[in-house]
Length: 119
Image (cartoon, rainbow, N blue to C red; front, side, top):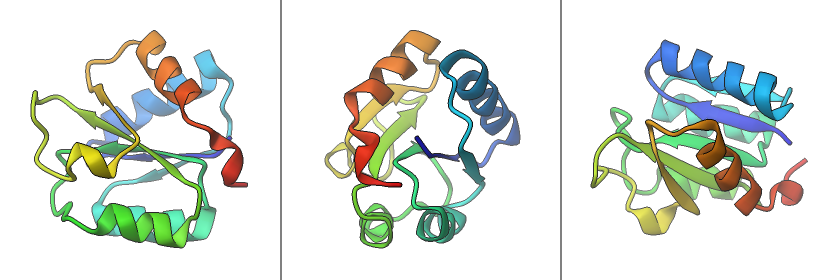
């Protein structure tokens, strides 16, 4: 399963990469530090799942739809440290997890998505 981790904090991206690879056996991990990079990387890499920081600067309505258009079948898991994330609306994502997740919560969110649609 290919996973795209989108967060403006390099430490969060590194921690997620380590967690995904060491505890979940996911080796195909891409990263994006901005909303614009997310669209570009998703179009090139066609991930099965995008782990998206819902509080990402410059994340505007419509970008999630653009990712879905460029990477058909992708599942979007939103991550937020707020009780009510700014963007996108939870209806635009397949699941939302707290950014202070533990491995079990992340594993459950990944298992709930069907990553077989994207290569």
